[in-house]
Image (cartoon, rainbow, N blue to C red; front, side):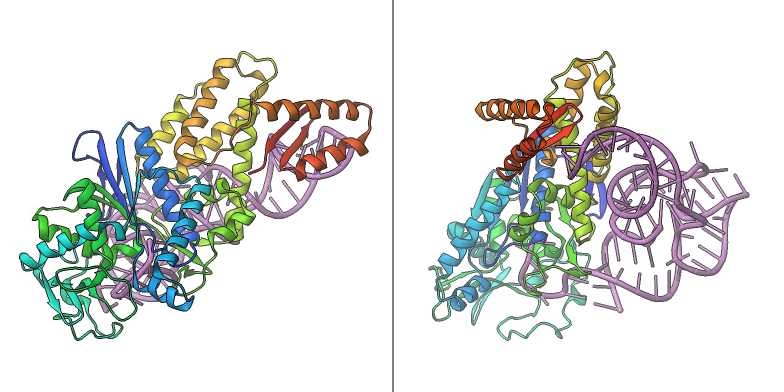
Length: 458
RNA sequence: GGAUAGGUGGCAGAGCGGUGAUGCGUGGGACUGCAGAUCCCAUCUAAUAGGGUUCAACUCCCUACCUAUCCUCCA
């Protein structure tokens, strides 16, 4: 398996530190505001990458943090006359629920920053002891000059970094590049005890505290949106490596591209975002996943209706074929289709820097072939094709869930059988009424010649 | 100004040093009680500009220009 490592800028062969075991960490959200399509894209991509790693035989520990204490959360709490805790809790719940809707369910553990204060303090103490951090007027800072590789991930030379024009000067810092490890409490702010006084952690330290806890000082993959490369990921590297003295924090870094709206980055601060909830009112989760995966994961995508419509069309096409394969209820033919080239093609696409777009194209080709030859297919071929679909679905999550057993199926089949008789009697008024009512109840019905197909709308 | 991706047909987007992927859209046809879906055909002097390498460049190299993102919080 090969993919682009942002640290080197090269596509590299993936070699985990310990055999088939893989530790992957992805930066989660700050829970202060509703989540938008950009978040959806990043987390859907990593969900699919995680699932692909698992389906390729790796034993994966996928860890994600949730930033539940931060300046913006406090600001939001003040604006809404509530506590930082309740703001964080509200949006944490919303986040988890959205991820659940989007079938993002590969994360083994969500770690909240506030539950790792002890570990955070331990890291800051070690940084103080070995001279990489210092206490200043309003908190504790990391001394960037003390870490020679600062800038390596983002390819920035340390000297080029501070122009001073856009950053409001903080006179407590010894150097403008330095970043906060611990912020001392201001009136009304939530705070924890520490050797440097009551306060709260800076943004970057939670990640290394959490990853050190579960993965140790060096691990395999670190992911996140490309807007986190600088300064966030640079800071994480500086913190952990200054403690560990090791060559790496994570061996491989994967960064996802941004989502723009009318050519401008969708972001909380600009306010030009479409929330995931709004999107889910108009498109089902599988369509959203398709749209977010259907392209190079590192490229910027411009969000548009046509992007979503294309995803909708393609998803529906796959649904039709997959449903037929799974609900095969007519005679089999004797045509054998060799699925090996399709399976290998998808594998090759995915192993080559997670080329979802190409994998999608190949599954579409297989779908077209299956549809075209459907009546002639042998049972073995139907099963083989289904298994390719299922494997594909195991990491993309774009296929429809097939309801092909149970009480509901019995009931719907019965209703549709009665409707079939009405149609034979040309009682279209009643048969259309039944179809209409089933549709209202969320059951799609399609008449394809004599075959009637139905499924539950999602 | 520095860094990182890119600039391909109406749109989205691959691949390849030498047969113009594919999807969406559009046009036409087939099928159909209706709705929906599907199928077939068509849609093309496609490569930001200018140099260079080569028998041959969209594909390699250089230059310019343009776009997005980062250099402040951000997925």
